[in-house]
Amino acid sequence: MKIRNNFIKENITGYLFILPQMIVFLAFLVYPILEGIRLSMYRINYQNERFVGLDNYVSLFNDPVFFKALMNTVIFVVFIVILTVGFALFVASAVFDKNAKYVSFIRGSYYIPVMVSMVVMSMIWSFLLNPANGLISYFAKDMGMGTFNLLGNKTTVLPIIIFVTFATNVGQAIILYIAAMIGVPKDLFEAAEIDGANRWQVIRKILIPSVSSTTVYISIINIIAVLKIFVVIQLLTGGGPNNSSVTLMYYLYNNAFKYNQLGTASAVGVIMFVITLVLSVPQLRSIIKAK
Image (cartoon, rainbow, N blue to C red; front, side):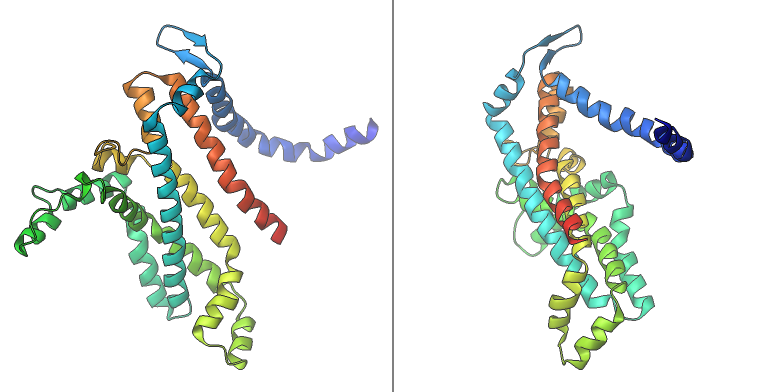
């Protein structure tokens, strides 16, 4: 007992320093998650709430729109993560060892869209893609190709949203990769040069393995960001045409604020939380094992 009291006295200062952060963490992260799980088991309206067990989940799995939203979200996650990691690796590996001013220019050029609000970027793309008076349609008509309604076509709407999201967010991944590659020990590059390794061999054998932890981090933050994708869908397509671009977050929003189905919306949130854990935890464990 005396040893325990001494331990508390020695560490009380540290506990007091982390106490405000722990209160914020519990109040704004842990409590909302637990409350969301609880609400997902209730049928809720503005007057009262009634316990229904797993009925909200059953109704979700009987709703074809939910499966469409789930499939679209999976497609977004897979393609945006692959495109972001692949393109950012390509750009970063091409410029990380160049002149400092050139590297700074590349960083700034790609990071500008990240600094701009997603609402602003979505409105810009909405103007460009507008079939009536958008810039893309104008040039298409000028070249005799007719009107392009890319956002109103079931075949093209998903690739367009994937490209817009990727183009807006890839700058952050490029900056992270450049910073990680600059930190790779120079001895490795000198040894590779002595052994006669070409540029591709250096990238494949040295750079990519050395920045693997950065790749995992970029993958995780992009998975979380794509699962929360909402603004682009709301401003460009509204989930259309015919639910072709609806995502889990947009489906959650509709149930919570349009249809007043707060229990169903909470169930969608719980499912998104589980998906995030399933996709992120194995990658985090791989980093911990590597270290």
